[in-house]
Image (cartoon, rainbow, N blue to C red; front, side, top):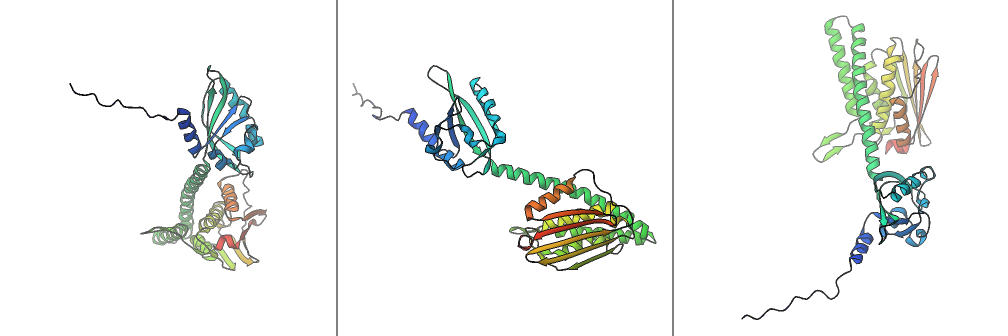
Length: 336
């Protein structure tokens, strides 16, 4: 009869499941917080310190509302009501405040905590920073809106160019040539605002402010009196799209119901560079009364975007002679 082998022995110091749980919480990149049913913070992991800037000693024992902006305080009673009912709150996107006062976009998952008798005594909260995702979504939304608007404007400009050419041409051949030339100029203006594709990826474009304005306005140069004068600062790759979109928008509006829609209309663009500031004055002169928009459209949102992105100011004045737009831009933001 064969001898029995040694009996396997269990480890003398088997880790307690509680130790595993603590290690997971301590090592998590997400903020993991617990609070009681009165909203008082009970535990606070290192991930919460990294996210909110408070140490555990600073917040444990304090109300969770120290993290909530004033305009979001109404969310907490609703969350606690869900927890008391035994419900879990998943992927709740909101805004919270860090110790330094900065606001951050978060996705929260909040679950009830029960004691040994199964009674709900509090809530665990997992907070994940979604600021980068939210910014990426906003940028994507803006770019998509710009793309849609630019495509519509390109069609509108193309239609305007066809009508303009038809009025000025003496023959079918002349009209065809004029349309072709103007659409080609419009394409060059569009191309000037887009980056190039090279073997190693996208290569940014840069130009000067007068070149940018002349290229975008080239389709109208032989029909209306257009003057561009003054300084000619560089427009760096970071600013070229924003500035081109603004000039493109002004051009489109002028072609629809401004000086570029009037065969005797005039456009004057004056550019100045002094004390680190670029001043661009867009002045339209036409016989027709200016059409003042009654609602804020994409053009207004575009101007606000340019103001935020480049630190610029855009002021419109509706005069009897036509629209005057004054744009002030920090040179450092435009040239770099």
